[in-house]
Image (cartoon, rainbow, N blue to C red; front, side, top):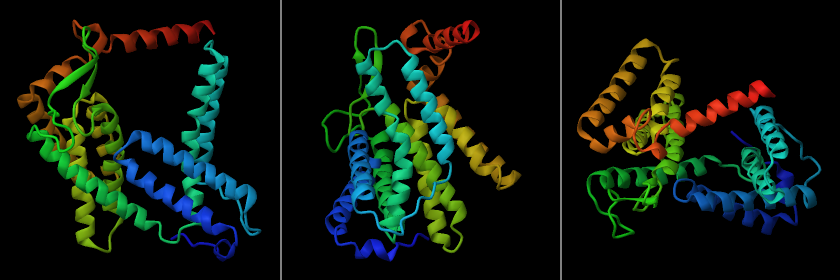
Length: 303
């Protein structure tokens, strides 16, 4: 439970700032499951207005409280910054890359927003749950029915950013980049599966979160994202390991059945999975990654 300090409510300058912050936060929550660009735009807006409030309208009883895992993220951001500075890229590219570190600060920004501006943060979780439910159901039917409600093209049709070399596969559909949305929804799947474990007062709500998390896991397995294919069993292991041996065995049994069915019936799944380690088309295999890792290892030995 997060309580809102009374002094914030009484601030004479907070009305407009609070309304703008609330609007930006609503748009950010709506964009979490729908628009990567919206996530960047609205999260930056919340950050700017919250920093402005801290500088100009901060109440006297405001106190800094470091969110959990704050220092590990700061350390990671610092390592990124050092890597960018010692690189040989032009300064224009360095500034662009440094700006990306701001995404690691969004976690702290939203922590303070919910702590000082909103007494009912659960409504944002409820909003996110509704969005993920609607999109999850839509994605389930879109996987079997080659129709798109927004674009006339089928989601089953693939195009490539470099057609002659068949590089950069994209899906024509409402969510047109399978890799990006697979990564996003894998996070949401873990979130709702985790909530199904900690919510114990309401059995229907617990079952609902469990079902939603399982649906999103299934959608991630159906994508062309090999990251999701490898990450789903790992995430399941981390979520089930503390529940005991029986839930762990059952969970892996169900995931194994899904993977086996996909390998046996989905030709695209089999083809992309086989390209993970070897393929005549060098651009869509692990060979470029292996060469990059080998180069990094040689650099580590030299310096």
